[in-house]
Length: 184
Ligand code: 5GP
Image 1 (spheres, helix red, strand yellow):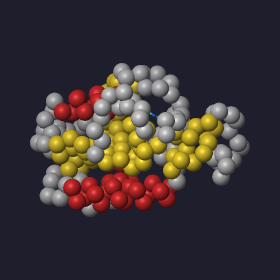
Image 2 (cartoon, rainbow, N blue to C red):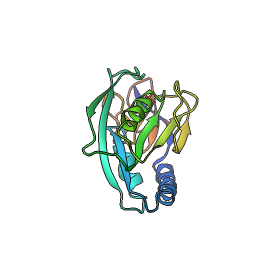
Image 3 (cartoon, rainbow, N blue to C red):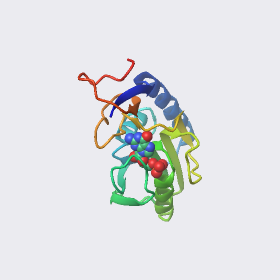
């Protein structure tokens, strides 16, 4: 497998996260906002999006895993790391890298809702168009993308490529020696 076509460039990501951050800043004025990122994939979105939110936010992290290392979600989610603190009465915004089937988010939403937050919304950098097998209401969407398997900007293929500053399609074939994306 190798890095294919670049779907969303570093510049596009930066510009869109600035817009989303401004929107979130406006929507949560005067509220006690807690950003919850889902590790590992969302670590970059969390770092960059939170810097565009001009409010005194609190950050927390969860780690979940769908079983196995396949490129498809099984729908069975395991919590590897839970939140450090309680969220009851707080305005929680889940920060995600990508919504594909929506199964992970459906599980997370249910898991967090029983803890009685004041509100619970979702922000995702990427949303795969038309692939949701369960309805998920995502308040902030960075980019809608086609249903290809993508890597970069936090997203991995068997643990690698998370550090790429852009989002690219994963493609069949040999990795070129210099690791540059195809067609760049
Ligand atoms: P969902 O439950 O919405 O199907 O997707 C859950 C998780 O699957 C995402 O948080 C992400 O970790 C992984 N995932 C879904 N689509 C992709 C993709 O195109 N590339 C990568 N690297 N991970 C994906």
